[in-house]
Image (cartoon, rainbow, N blue to C red; front, top):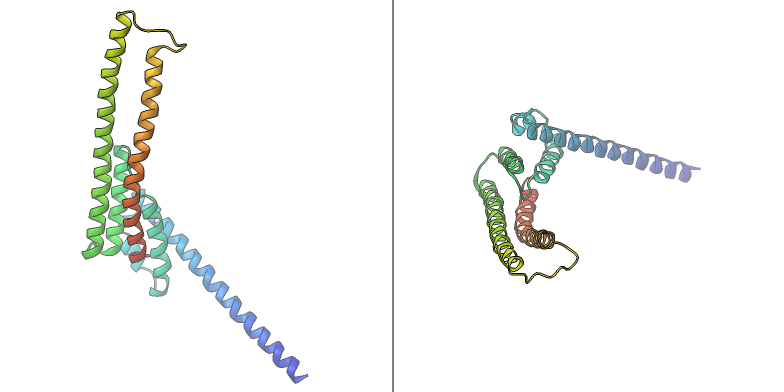
Length: 197
């Protein structure tokens, strides 16, 4: 009977440890979610400083809180296609800098991220202008052919065929460009995750 009781005691002790671990995991998960919420508030301009919110918690809760904040901020760093998306990306970068204290290596990484997103935007606009110029030249050639009576009807108006070609070409160019820049951006985001997460 003593062996059974001692085995039973061991099982109960193990169950108690598992329950305590589960409680700690749940607490960390809730703190992680709280960090995500705080970062979302920061992104929505309803919270001024992430580091102040982080410092309000005891040290044992700061790691999961910071991880949640970093996760949301990194999701908001992407290749912007317009001014409002660029503002959102810049806001997320500022949040990363706020969490890191804006010093040293992290400041350098964030500056490189800004450079990548800025270069992407500039390169994208240049490609778009080049494509528009090519289209203009092709359209003028098409009009000249029509005026000369050389155009044959192929079931689709020349303008519609040209527009379809433009759309297809722009989609291809934009995808290639995004792939190139995304690779570099993802490397920097991984570095930020490793340093702050």
